[in-house]
Length: 201
Image 1: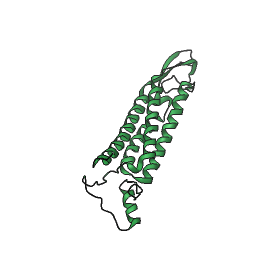
Image 2: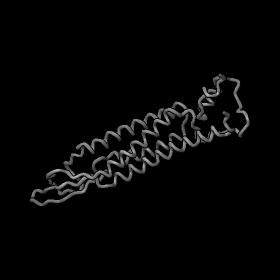
Image 3: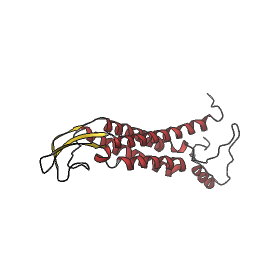
Image 4: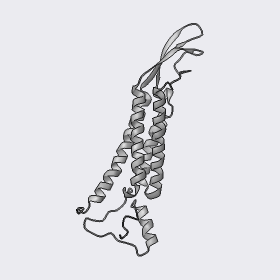
């Protein structure tokens, strides 16, 4: 079975853009989850007044907005890097996704202990059990899964993804090779190619 000229670069670019879309979707989901109501807690003030306070994802999980911004930064890093450095980015994205999985699971297993809230009356204390909403934690879990998949793809297939600005030869034409093997290896890594792919078998 033969491979049509130009099909391999097309698949490589498609894989790269899939990773970009996954990271962008994760960033959007994290940003949205930070603004959703995650819990409601009754607070009682020193004069006996009671106020029902809605707590957002940003109140209970302050890392959501920074993680959304980090996901956007990961998009730029994946596009701009290649080779080993891109794999390092993949590991970081994978670890961040795994950490978010843990944080979202905590929300479903009683990890939303509310002791204070920005909109609670001064000197007030929580009363009774916290009433949780599942939508925010579910959105974070979805974002975490997207980041895990994106990080795994980058880690495993970084050598086959083109780097931003990498040049491709026209279909059917042979790539120019350097006579110096060491120099050719660095050229391949700089272009986001796996230097072992072009070795004769």
